[in-house]
Figure 1 (cartoon, rainbow, N blue to C red):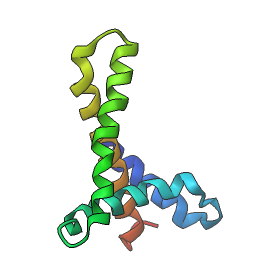
Figure 2: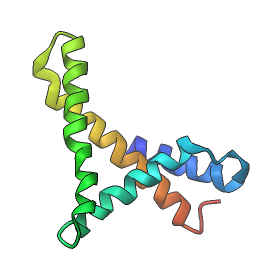
Figure 3: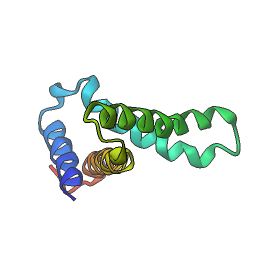
Length: 102
């Protein structure tokens, strides 16, 4: 819920100050589009590339868990990152598309 609000807040900031657009503001939009494109994967193999996010996320979570010396946390860390990424990206997309957010 918080990450969704952060995403909406960033969208509000971008609407008020369009000069602030940079590559870091585009990443959540690219993430949202790529996750949405997985639905099109049966029509063309290129859309399966977005699914690489999940094994990469697992590897990153594994790395973080090894670093903290607690392998039992791998799926917990992965779940937290999933919630953060999806919440933030959906909040930013919602904020940019919603006309009442200014």
